[in-house]
Length: 474
Image 1 (cartoon, one colour):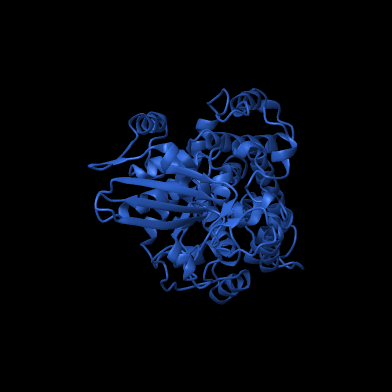
Image 2 (cartoon, one colour):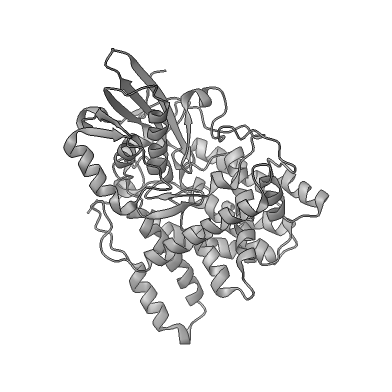
């Protein structure tokens, strides 16, 4: 299917809504990778690697075309670097952030990709094309890879980065499986695809939401392995906060955005003995700021559920640990498992891709997830947890994604601080009630979906509207 023109905001476009019966695991929702973007950095790296792994033999040359949002904001999101790394066999989970610059420079100097024992011609100006103004119909984040062989054979494959670092080949989206992890259509003991079903499962079994998720994870692996995974995620979130609070200087990309987390941390530590009530939220904002400065610098973060919203859940998790009496590792796991349950619903019933939903699908979803998780560890009932998740999204509806210069810096970094504080507010507000409320979580998710589909393309991670055009780049 030929690419569509971006200029027509009313053109119909398929959306990557997954089969609501598809099983999703916590390992699909929380992945450890690098910044600055899950859909524009992690996704393209995975797609490039998937393409290389699909090749039957060594090609003479390879090339990649980026479409839609990837083309429009890919340079600011390091999509070019991600493609080069993926073609070279690197994975987001294991690539060394400190070695990336040298590796990319070597590729560019040699005009050559090295994949295992293969040496493949790759001239970046010729073989990596940003097709600005064009969309592939299946999804806003499209990629087309081509391999040319010495015997004249040409192999072409399309991939789509559907949010949170998840990638699907074109045939999967064409077949209606968009967004679903491949091979994950298995039977869970307590499945749910809506907030209503989630509450019904809890009512029938007497289990909290976190335990429902943990029992469902047993369809993939033993409980101790799931808990070990959660511990790795928690530790990676902590590490991103700690590293972010130690770094200083300018963030890359040309906007001259200066890191602030280290200086704020020093000031807060100096005033700890005479903390004012508002200082709690200053600490929470610091934690989110630290993570997203790391993300903007290409450091290691956890998609939660995306890189652009990577600071919200870690900040709320650290709030729980630092300010809630009795906090422990079991509670941290409960927070993440509960948050995951809410994330599953957004992936199944809408999308977590800013290229489809705007930032309501990233920071909004992260806020909703974090609010639910915090409400759970503060002793909330399942109904109060669902209410917290609903409040978290209801007050993020319509949030646009309009990064200045295509960089995940302005307004993205500060937006995570707002999302984290709002999540805490939503949790405590829900706990003041008995769980009964007028707007259900399912209703607010559907509203988010409709709002995202109605939102003009220029407000969905294209940098063609909003702050991106009304603020002069430095």
